[in-house]
Image (cartoon, rainbow, N blue to C red):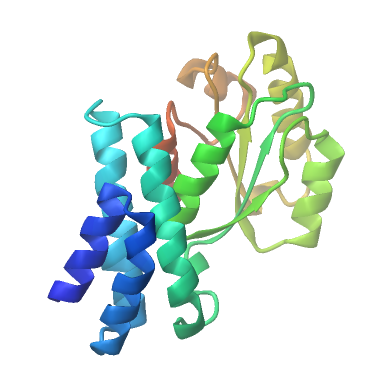
Length: 212
């Protein structure tokens, strides 16, 4: 890895959003490959951040800052990438289920999944089942649907949403992953989801493994 890309990676890891753009530009000016800047300088750096988060070495605020720093870098990089490279893993739809208005966890998951190389379609919070299914029909190349429920009272809503998707003709073409504070692996298995993650860092790893 070139010194320029290593610098980008270090700035992303430290969450230096104000400096990342210039460092990406320097790497481009030095003739570094844009895809390599993305993969080695940013996606790998966010992988390190995710690992630290899992080991409780850093916490949500630091992770958010790093994800935002990466976003700043991607803005500079985007025009130089082959179209679609930033979403090289494919499309992922994310939503908090009907009846649930929590978005901080979902937003963090969306940022980490985007950092891992997905094109994320974020439907927001309190999303009815029909809207999720309609969004998939509009984006039939979507690889993963990620659903979150943050309250024990909205767990039935999550179950109903997964059940509705499981009945669709496109179900074989898409993976469903679920998460949120009250959700467990057992619950995810019982409702017929393909995967469960307990935090944003492992959600990004899970999403990649589901499309591998």
